[in-house]
Amino acid sequence: MSPASPRGPIVIDTDVFSADLVPSSRLAARYEPVITGRPALVSFQTVTELRYGAIRRGWGAARLLKLDTKIRLAEVVHTGPELVLVCAQLRADCEAIGHALGQRELNADRWIAATAIRLGVPLVSNDAIFRGVPGIGLEAAPAS
Image 1 (cartoon, rainbow, N blue to C red):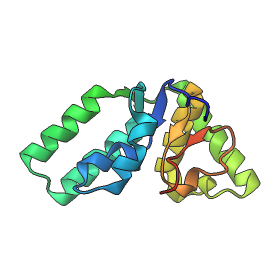
Image 2 (image 1 turned 30 degrees about the vertical axis):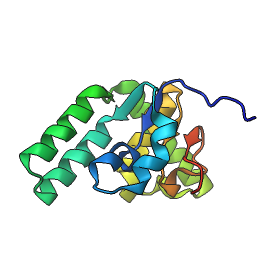
Image 3 (image 1 turned 180 degrees about the horizontal axis):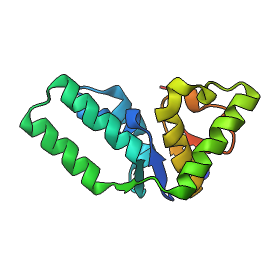
Image 4 (image 1 turned 90 degrees about the horizontal axis):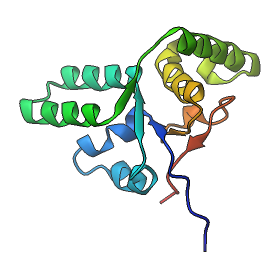
């Protein structure tokens, strides 16, 4: 028998948070046991990415309503002085160890990681970029 998984709050990365909005997504089913019943937090950056993707792909009214409802059910973490400091420190730390998250191009992912670090809760993501990030607790679904 395996120990019970933690059921506390989590920051959910864009890939996992949006998976059930993608028809026939296998990712949604894989992560359902990880996120179900847990308080869901998302970074303002995730909301930005979701809205941009919907605009770029020309989503219709029904799909946009589903997205809006999903965002309203999560707690969106907005930026502020403490999060800015954590994000800046994270970039410096990643640069120092040669982690890709120190690169300018990955600023969006860095904000999401900094959100989890700032709150002291795990990040749930399927994105390998978060592996080895200093100070982050990463939760991923078991391999299928």
